[in-house]
Length: 146
Image (cartoon, rainbow, N blue to C red; front, side, top):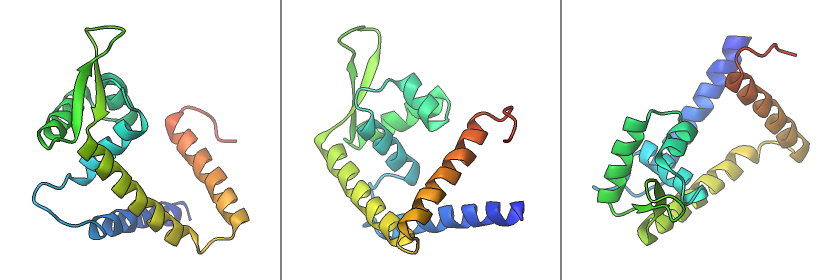
């Protein structure tokens, strides 16, 4: 049964990503799925630093630095010195990055609504509570199940 649940979660995740890719116009310079994730993280956390972004994304600093450089080249993200500490860099979306962030967010919201429409409101609440527990168990792997 545990494997069935894991397989369902993987399939839902794969189908969601596939639908997200299919719903976007494919252009030569369109960001990759991971670049879109980074854009969303910066969009939700304007002014975030590279180290904090790496931790949030679960990636190492070198990977995030490379992705940020790519997004800067696409004109979607800018790095600015932090006013409080000139040694630190803050990441922000450009106007084009903000526009893309809003478009991706709208597609994601529509797809989420479609997916969750199969559930009654109380089932959505239960699902959210269960998924939160599962996520927390992964964040704290040494915690005893209970």
